[in-house]
Image (cartoon, rainbow, N blue to C red; front, side, top):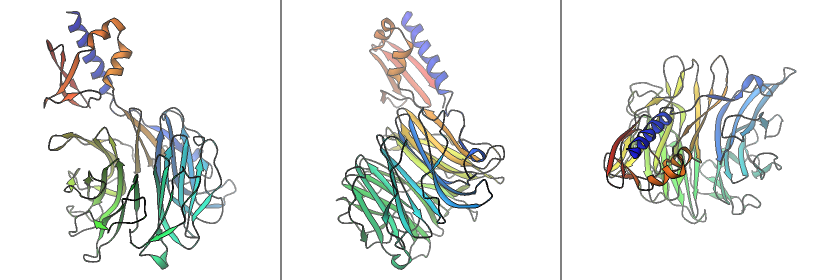
Length: 449
């Protein structure tokens, strides 16, 4: 009887925690309170434990009314997103536009790279104390040689790619660091054209690049993949991973987890509208050598906007946030997928924002049981960069925290199963589950998302 009451308490506790879903919206950066009142574009997040780092770019006006060109801005949170520091400018305050930053972390080391648009150079800056102080700006690709690019890492292996300039548009630049950015290899021109909006993933010795460019056969924008299996010494032939049809494929987002590669993009082939489309997904489980069939993950409204989507994997589960047009602006939507024996089971689609205005440029990252989301929001009451998180429950840890030792000891043989009979050991999602203790007691547990 005591065990029955204890299991009922567990059910109530878990139902309460899961009914919370995503946490509240927090304004990470309010434009009117930031230096220069900058516009905000292309916000990106990187996470190390409870320390969150975000970068973006924008232009503004200083206190004297002088126009400020695009600059790269940075801020961080030291308490898992609940409070945020005042933003800082990472790029040089000069007459050149600095834009399209990318960011990655390795413990307390934070790496940021961006394009100096007017000079066509690619810049890099590093902090080795968690964003407290920053080293000098380093030019990774010299002036008049590059046209956009990105940076990413896994551990101490740091990789950058930058598109060739207008004079070498059919090639891309490549550099790497094997010691956390202390030294870099010489820049190398790779004889492939990876196209415009580009993302990179690292799983040493494998490097994965996705980009968007025109297919010479169809004259439409498609998503291309190119990979290296020896840290950039040689490169495989470029491959179209979107499906050439009758409309464009735009703005890919990439997530790499060991040998698994997840790519999403906006595809217009099925939409009746001229500006919006659907989010498509493609997965490789072997570092890009082979690809599973394309999955159309959210094609219920055909209203996905070209203002980017973002993807993240958590314990083999896929999480996607994207932008949809609603006639009055744009809003963020979210969906996740749980692996099953023959594929994935997709959740319902949840709308994440509801304010009047445009919600754009979402970016996801995961750390320590929390999925972190940032985006740019132009709502009239507070134009800025917004943040929210979704917490995942670790069943064992919650039991330890919420029950006395003598009661917890009785739960050592607690087993949780989903409706397919698969045992769940750590994380629970929305759905129906079965609880067993010593194979003698069974209770149904229902969890709301």
